[in-house]
Length: 334
Image (cartoon, rainbow, N blue to C red):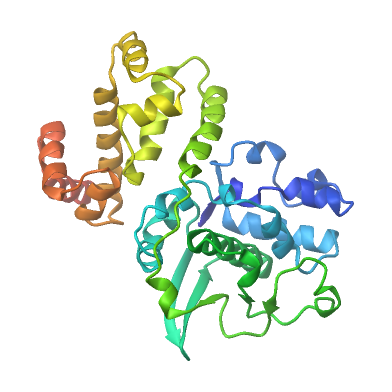
């Protein structure tokens, strides 16, 4: 079963209200509840989200409900994904890495690049069991894709045309000047087109993006782990490792503390930044090695190691086994 972060449906309530319908009734109608959407980093079945989008489109009488929802969302609807990918050097590097990180937001989704007629076709593929609601999911996801690409190119998202395989909706041409993006229907793919030269463009990095992201995350930590600095620090380290920005200074800043104060308070838990870092790395490493989804080199990079050899040495110190031996042991036990 494929899953997706509940944050993918950010702004659902407000849009449905705006369209004079009751979001609670729609949620209940597909077997979901509002409590499942309180934490954007919880996961729901992708097929259930498809049901929700389809029900909303029908109840609100909006065949482009997915597009409308995507327009109202910010990049935060994609969770940590934009932040992790923004550290790539070029736009081409982003697309070479994106499928390695998409699982953080959803499973069953992939992006493919293909040169065609002087353009680079960025195709979005969604593997959902049920076809009902898939068009709405694709609409939403293509808008999110366009917004993300616009952010790393530092351009206006309105300059990006959306390509959809679905047939043109009856009322689209009548509403072309009502704030909807430019959409081409009956296309051969779902996604966007880029110029080949744009792949070599440097990724635009907002110097305040990371700060804004963790300022909001701090509010989430205080709510999820009230008065528990150990768990808050552990959560932040988990999120920061893959960004290459994980340090005691960065974690302390995200927690609005001086590094010395953070270390002092962690000492009261009988721990330290270094010890938590080691435990988080070991936990993530063991899980990734058992999952077999990534190479040992890729796992090392996502844990913040510049070299796989250093990761391997540390892993042996933690477990007494090399990463390869650990993976083989997991295979024998499964």
